[in-house]
Image 1 (spheres, rainbow, N blue to C red):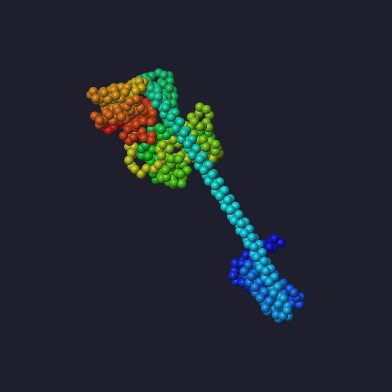
Image 2: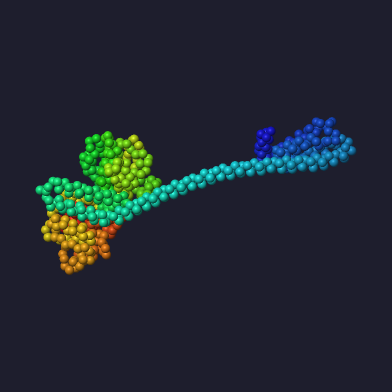
Length: 546
């Protein structure tokens, strides 16, 4: 019944939308009622208008109030002034006014009631539709707000992760920065003294003593490398970026890798001949490739394949927005892939953390990959790690492309071992640490220089102003009262051509900007050997020596 009523209501809603249909329904209802009245004339004495009520109901429901009133008035007029006078006596006609008035009043009330019920039904449907729309809108708003909250949670988690990373790097930076100066000074004394002792022994030294010296020197080198790796991860190591041909660099590393990785590892070089030039610290980039290759070897204990590829890539804004401190643009990509056991999701999530390693105790510091990551970030580059457990790993290094040919490293790569300087060159050593100063003096004398040394910049200024002529200033950077850069500027006011070699074990100083060495600076990082010192002296004195 309700279903039929709903169908009838739907039809009524359609017929009420057309004026022609509404008038037609009114006329049809009137004609049907009048026709019924004529057909039932013998049976309707005293009830002349009874057949019209059904038509009024029909017209009121399907056409509305005023079409029902049209049916009411037309039927009342036709029956009262046409049908009754032809069928009844004059007395009956006069008496019919009472039924007509009753018919008009009743028909009016029927139309009012049906229209009110229909309007109420329409209002209920409209309210239901509005409620449905509101529910749908509410569901949409809830889903939208839920997504917004989810995005906010993810953004907050990403922000917290970046903050955690920044705090971790800052803590490591403070740790390494705090210990680097004093620790590297001590290592400089150890390394330099061992090197000098070995040189003084010459070729005729006791092999057992030489072996002990070499073991101690190797331990000191590992300690220095540990500090440098921490500084690299914290992006506080001093970088010396130069224009590089990546293919040539990878090719030069290949010979070392073949000897280091062993015969079980097959090295496949896939170098793009049109790879772009880039600017980076050559030593650090070589070290990064070697570290990753050694990690790949350890992931393939039974042997496997190591693929090193170079390519040109362009990183767009959409990709860079998902990574911290990464600018859109052109990059040179170095991809190192292995066929090893790969990494689990848990290991992959922590792979770049310092001191995290899956190797046994004593077989790894956990700083190899984190050092590479820190070096690339400090160089404006990027690292991406792809790994699937059981299928191997691929680590992609991205170094910013350079379009400038300036800064190309045209220096000779020949060894400066056993360097013999020209005679009568004088060096002034400025170092506030007594042990480091004594070691530097001894090393310079070993190389054949005339050496003067002081423990403060102010004494150095007094010596120069008193007439001491020097060819090279060898100064520490971090000193109380006046740093090495300020000292060099002061002395160059009277000696513009003065050559300067800086040394430091600490990166937050006046000769580095964002960890990059100034273009006019020659820097020797502590600890250093006599051979390292000789090479840097050649750099500092050129082109004087030429």
